[in-house]
Image 1 (cartoon, rainbow, N blue to C red):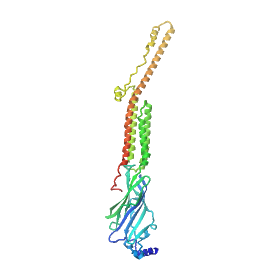
Image 2 (tube, rainbow, N blue to C red):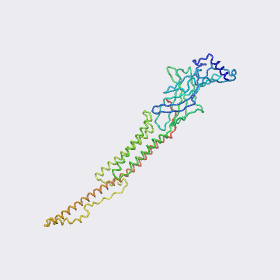
Image 3 (cartoon, helix red, strand yellow):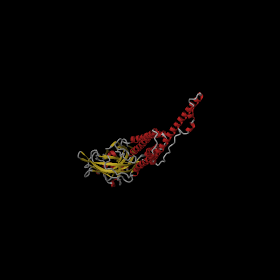
Image 4 (cartoon, rainbow, N blue to C red):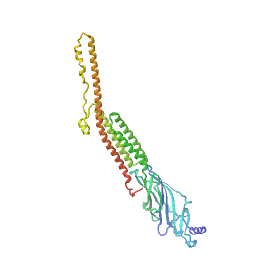
Length: 428
């Protein structure tokens, strides 16, 4: 068999010139498709995708025909790639492209009827225009575009076919490669039509990482912040703590938003996850603003010692308070001795006069202490009544903001169940 192979090669390559195109009666027809595609990495912020691909090319060269009956029925041989004419196609949207086999190591298969088959494995780092509107539930279409650097359609025609069923395609840990399509196109350059082939990789992001690392913490932080901000309080102390809690939550969510911004390309499109975090930040900011407004209003009315109106209490479905009676002049009858002391002020006994003055001072001090106690009790009553009013407001806004928070999460997660978008006409 080895002798027959050598005889075939000696006969068919006698006078063969690989620099000349294998013209027959028109342009060379090259049938090609992709049979292997492995996504290595996709850099969103740089808009680059790296693959390992392998595509086959088949064409006819009538100069390499032999009669199998003359060579013991041998119908095919394998020769090095540098011995025959090879169609030249380059990846014109690549940042880096290199063949994984050199010309000396790559082989082609020759058939007795002149048909030639070659399998070309390549490492390609190509430009991929990232569409981030649906991030992290986005689907990307990244293409590897091949074209002839010189030959036009009158010299070479490339017939691109869809990948066979036994082709192997896979993504990586972040991206699921669920389909690869082949698109055949032509373009004009200096009045010549040339062939353009696109291997389009359909990529679906795996969103679990972003849901567990960003979405879940954002929702929990916002829910707990709203719960803490609108928890009913009885005085200014807890209300101040609520404002501090809300500001701390805003800072934490701003950090999460920075993580999302660092992973996305700098473009005018804001990703869906970014919109969700912005909505949650706005909700928490509005909640903090409302809490600060409640704090200012409560301080204003407490300092003015103004009780809530009956109309406001009825509007909030609260029972009206009972006005507390003053105790400053309660039990004045216990101090009737003061009148007697007034009668004895001109008494000739000085001891009696000093005793009456001391008793009067004690009575005045007692009345002053009662007055202060009444003012303190009245202030506590005002604080308690306004706390009842603002507690109803807190419950109302707690329900409203928690509902809005859940609604924002539901709208965000709804995108995960939307159908896969259709392949766009313009990829590059």
